[in-house]
Image (cartoon, rainbow, N blue to C red; front, top):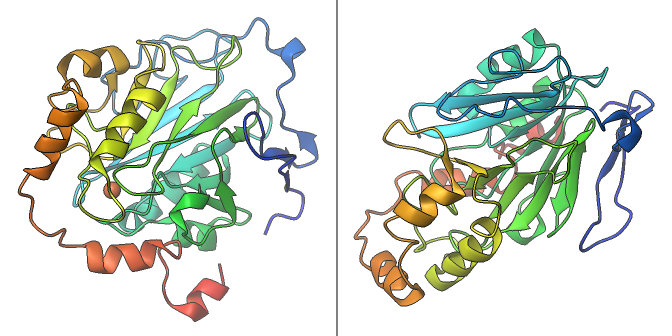
Length: 306
Ligand SMILES: [Fe+2]
């Protein structure tokens, strides 16, 4: 536990935030210091690993971004950090237990201070690396939606913001694949990455979407979630899914509005498609879901240590 990191949730509902103070430095955005900042290399599309060090940049770029891959479950893990902040605070999205060593090494090599490990939902196809990361990186907090009913240090509600340095992720509920799915979206405003970036979990995959026949899934709900919470974002928003099975890395709202073979249909046709996928029983679900309800570590002794 990092004693000097404190968290405060000043309210619930729209606009409420998780504010962090890391090493005594307030991590809320200071607009005066940000007006001239160009944050994100704006054209990182199609690059699995991109950052302020590898793409087009200005001297004041501040978002470091990495897309990491776990091959057995074809899962993407994302690492975001504000590297213009002196503490280089970072957030990791959807880590996998099998690649935790790699992820910890990367965080250390880049000199980042990992504050949060967040999950988009309770995964059924792999065990999250959240519990292992908490054990290996002092002070890390786990976070997941309140609606997931999963164990975590922080339970997130719609509209909450996860701040890391001068940047933040906004929580958008996108249930339908599971009842607790959320999409994390980078902030809005001149000081935040442009174009915006959305981490959609399994609610929206590149030219697809997650199945809706387990874990409280509901095709109508998923259809409404994607259209109201993801497709309503600016068309150039970069969409990063939790998985891809064909080697794709990123898409945009505009691309999916044009080419998603399921979600371009009307709701009735979408439901018909989802009801007739004929998918096999998820082979990992009976192991992964119980583990992921408790951050990936089921052993109560081990859990009490993280
Ligand atoms: Fe999933």
